[in-house]
Image (tube, one colour):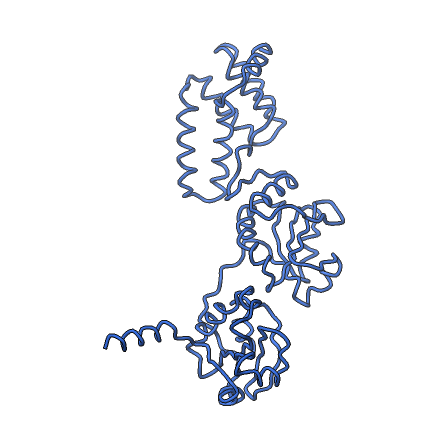
Length: 369
């Protein structure tokens, strides 16, 4: 009894919705009124393993498990007992995917080998929907022949474009990092993260224009420039973030949000230092100088003025208390991204008043009072 239970358990675990075909049963499944996607491969195919198709193909069959009466997901060992089928359908390499219509007429499958691409193909061909939940839209811009020039060649924007192919292993490996990059720069209006499917034939005019011959190819389209720059840097999140910060003049941090330099203004940092070392009587004069300068500089200057106002009016503990409060909010990250950016800038500016100063710097600031 225990042996029978073990065998039944193993069978349940190894159950698959992929139909195993061979020369004896092939015609019983294919061309009998139901369309079929058939993988012709071999268990020893290194390319199959490299492309990670085997587990994806199992997921694909599971995605159409409720529609077995409408579409067939099958495989053939075309290097074993299925060799005659491999010869019949002119299989040149492994794995080969072929689509058979309801009458058994074959056509090669030449699109992406990720789960979404395979499922979308079957739905398009058969009208049968899978049980796969639609993935959320990507955080970056999707470009094609219709919108490429409008976005990538916008003279007011800096645009980073990856030219990729759905089947490209390096592209797949880079995708999660690129998704994070898109989220990090989502709120930067002049710094766009974008992607184009360079394997899609409808985009061939663009790939030929920019001489895209390998994947991924990465190009940066600077604002105000007529031609893009080749991106030859690293492909870590930090590499991309540092590159875009330098090119776009932004201050984004790896992992999202702003870095410690965001919102800081050099002239006001100097005034903050003078304010830090000045006597009580001299602080008011520096505050008046800051107010005059604020009329000609960025909006972040108002945060410097607010700190000075609090101290001039006697709230000497304001910096320490406010710094702790803002850091607590930033750690919780419970607000919108825009609000968190605003708070990070305020926190950065507070730091200009309290961060440690080199003795030489303090001496210079004191001598200027």
